[in-house]
Length: 108
Length: 126
Image (tube, chains in turn red, green):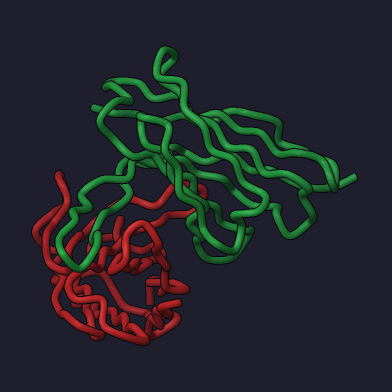
């Protein structure tokens, strides 16, 4: 089983700042990595797929990068609506998949 | 656009069967894969399995012995059954469209979940 480790567990930033979230895989997942945003009481929402492709309707301030085992989700300038939990998800061997444990992005 | 809605009992007794249905609107259930994913309270996400519109399925090995996912294309619905539940099965259960995967000589890769249903909390308790 491929384990995804997200860091940090909690990130405290202010609106307008840049957020950098990390996801590391226990073995290569090539570029088959997605990022989701989840707000309290809501379902996850797809942000990024295949490591760097923004999903439909996702603002340009969200970007993804990386390949192999190390991936990054960057939010260039935080909006108040961006404070949430973020999960990474890999699918190198479809349909099996695993999710990271999440990074909570909170207002400083 | 495609929307999904889960329905089913919110409380199930230990050792009984959890049954949920996902209704798909705004698009056809055909030519797509459809997955169930769950999230225990305060914890992370776990993929349960998928069903294809043809009826073929694939399950997470950790749940395979207890899970059945089926589809009714005439109703634009697919369903989840989880047998012999315990308190560890208490979770918010989500349905989602599962798409974007492709297959090559080395196997099948990729795929993401989008959109998701709003989720339904199922509590296992006597």
